[in-house]
Amino acid sequence: MAHAKAQKVAHADPVKVDPKHYTVEVENEKVRVLRIRYGPHEKSVMHSHPAIVGVFLTDGHMRFTYPDGKAEDITAKKGQVVFFSAFEHDPENLGDKPFEVIGIELKG
Image (cartoon, rainbow, N blue to C red; front, side, top):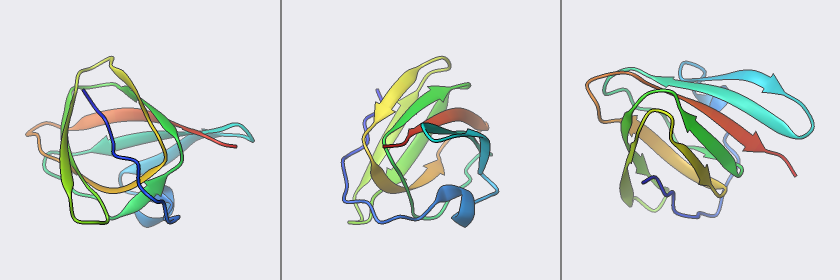
């Protein structure tokens, strides 16, 4: 089950620092909906999210590395829905297949 550790979050917008993996599908005053796609063994850069709901469109096996250097392996199944409190991380796809997630970032 996916659980991200709560972290003190410095703002580094994933859409700005890693547009290869993060695109905005919808944004308004309540939410920002991201499409998140990683190819096999691709890695991102350190970035942050406000509270976010993830809807996994594929199975995924990833590693979240946090600013303190600690890492957590996350496994999720297609169709799984998870909630993460605001956090900062550097994700990496550990799998041999691409994965895709819809991330619904909550505003205020």
